[in-house]
Length: 149
Image 1 (tube, rainbow, N blue to C red):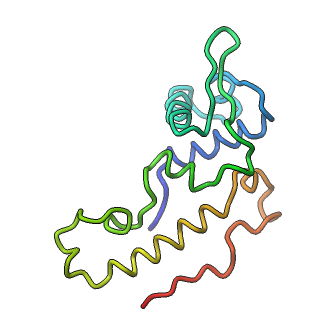
Image 2 (cartoon, rainbow, N blue to C red; image 1 turned 120 degrees about the horizontal axis):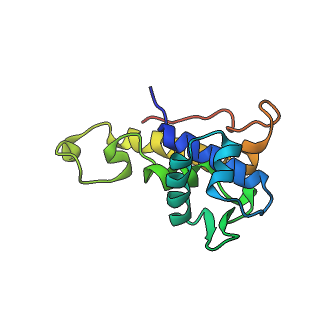
């Protein structure tokens, strides 16, 4: 089964909370309450999302966090990359030189094509799309085809 980690899923929830706040600066506690997640988890996510440039942090008494760009300018791919690193179905589809079988592997090119298709699909879905009620928007372009040679 292919799936993103629970933290990546939660990061998407945190990003939607910030996106819904329309530029308002929220405390980590406020984000945690709105997301219905534990504060330590939200604090960890906010730190990673800030480091990736998706969230802006503000210090001081009125400090907190705000989404760094408009929701339609942030893709799901950016959130996944911020949390998990480069998108790769297999190690060799994201980075070359990590596998001793690479020089004589007959499937690496196909995995790279699959990887590219998934990355393209994730880049086609914005945070604004994720805010829409389920079923109101077609998130993944259809048909998502992967040509295997």
